[in-house]
Length: 82
Image 1 (cartoon, one colour):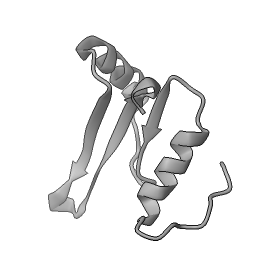
Image 2: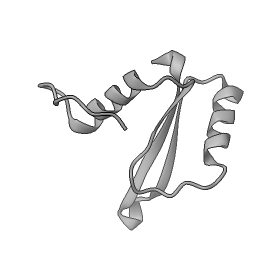
Image 3: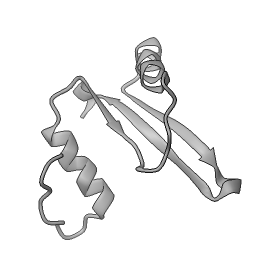
Image 4: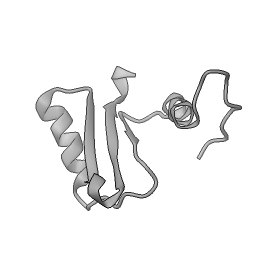
């Protein structure tokens, strides 16, 4: 957890929070997720393996079903691409 700064003009809350978190992070990867999904025990390792396998800098993993009224995505990013 970090103490966030006041929302600047022109920014929306979630992107501003993600930006501040990315600036404070010091790991090799960033993970952005919504608060309500439940992730399986292998999701993180599979996503990171996929980044390496595809030589990608960003991966979006959709979850849920819009027919249930709940959906979202999880973003994984290599730190060097930020």
